[in-house]
Amino acid sequence: MTSTERYPRRAEIIAVGSELLTPFRTDSNSLYITAKLNEIGIEVGAKCVAADIESELSAFLAAALARADLVVLTGGLGPTADDVTREAVAAALGVPLEEDPRLVEGIRMRFAARGLDMPQVNRRQALVLRGAVVLPNPNGTAPGQWLDHGAGHVLLLPGPPREMRPMLERVLAERLAPMSNARVLRRVLKIAGRPESDVEQVAQPVYASWTRWALPVATSILAAPGQIELHFSVRSETPDAGEATLDRAVTEMLAVLGDDVFSTDGRSLEQVVGDLLVARGWKVATAESCTGGLVASRLTNVPGSSAYVERGVVCYSNTSKTDLLGVTSALIEEHGAVSEPVAVAMATGILARAGVDLAVSVTGIAGPGGGTAEKPVGTVVVAAAWANGHRARTFRFLGGREQVRSQSAQSALDLLRRVML
Image (tube, rainbow, N blue to C red):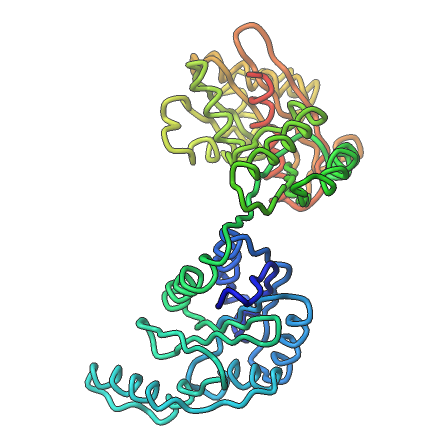
């Protein structure tokens, strides 16, 4: 790219391959391309997965070029009849394909180095869009291509990650990065204990003003079981200014969301809980019924968790709650296994038996059966206990069995966090 060409600010990605539209293959290339483009200040506005159908791929490219400065296509550069990316781009741009003799010879030599004759079908990989810059591929037979088209740019990359990634990095280093000091900087706020609609209602008046800042902050809200994420991004040619803007945005949001925000630095909830335990020199134990050890699993997924996780007990049956935790059968009979008194007894029971500083318990109805009118499927109680007290909460979670279990574990970890705060 010469200094007179316009530096792209918005890109779109087209991942090519009918196999990516099946349950057996996942498009991981787009995530990698997005991350690398963001590093040099190029936002990705859209991405799609396209089947190996020339006419459809051509239409996708034409539509993308109408919106974006840069379109990146990955895949479909092989030698077989269903590798149609080159032909689709040629049709969309009205540019002919021409065989490059040097590429033909390079592919021939690559086969010869392995003692093989080049199949004639591989000549298709030497077809180059007129006016395109050929991008060498030392890791495969499919060269990439870069083509300036009007005010935009089209980049063709091979599909295999081991070929695509080094080629993309060379393009960024040699053609794009020298043209701009801009970076897309991001922050993520992770929130527990509030539904998405409530977070949006509180947060929207705050971030509405950020679009008018000297460095506008773009925002998005994402929901997952038991967790809401607020994503902030800013495009800045001065990293310090960008980080300062994000610091200001985070500070303003924390002022309205308070302790419901459990992470501003990318840490998971189990990492945050682990760090709080380490800071206090505390150990924790778990007693789980409906989650079947999921809380303990998440805690011990964190490296170094042996410093603070003492033990975990799965007590699924009422008998195990009595035998392992000392929960009396009379208490279970009076209140039911899914109740705050039983959850507190489970937590205090494991606290005493493990000799730890903090304990957490979970009991509930994960479904699909077992619910009643008073305690429907999704009813879950979590409790925490410590030397001088305890706390319990009852939830009504929606979703299938795995969603209920996931939200239950998240709520148990969040209760531990809030107790320590």
